[in-house]
Image (cartoon, rainbow, N blue to C red; front, side, top):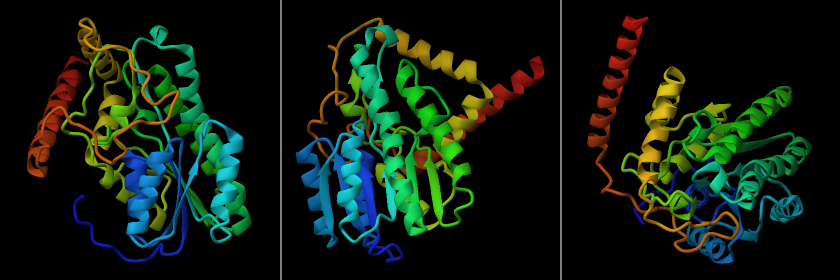
Length: 329
């Protein structure tokens, strides 16, 4: 684990609930809020991953508890809120983060997998919000942070139901932001990170025959976690935490058909040669090992300088495409 200096204690003593906190971005968020001196409540389905994250927080000298929770089950989420509140009588920050993903042809992914994807991603965020908002209103303050992902703006190729859940979360939270607009100290914050260099991809369900590994341009989960902390300190409605997430959003909005059809074509090309068996991942069962923040990348992670050069190339390419399109019009 790389060295991280404890930052200021602006959030010290506040209670933070994090769903999907046993690995990936969720574990990184637990670490980031623990470094701020918060009381941490970890929710996930797997007891082993929960225990490891709780220990990580204890090693950072903060109070932390883990509660086994399937966010698709409303009664379990209600119990999570009650136990979290028992720490110090309140919940200050609730992070909706638990999420699953299945890739493959829509009709070849089992229906029970589609149902659970909706249950975890969309219903999970509904359930978390449903229990958190009344607590915030009773306190007169609170912050809800939703890890929507860039999928809220751009569909993921051959992950139609995942994309539907992310779009649904975005629209639901936009509506709720209006509902709490008369509550000056209650904030609903949406964060839209790009693909993460986390274990999320390793744990996802795969029905495409492809052995996915994380691309080298993927974002650092600890950077995404820091962005969540920044939202807790300075709430705002929407946050794109890095340049690539903004670039993906803007590119898709400018060339939706080109981007979607091109990405789908690349997937189809790869799926013509199936070399991996179907894998249900963590959709219907808790995530298996590894329970850590970082996943495996297909290539070594490039330096920041290399990333900047690559981004400059992407911007130049997008500019050329836009110029040619304008000339054709």
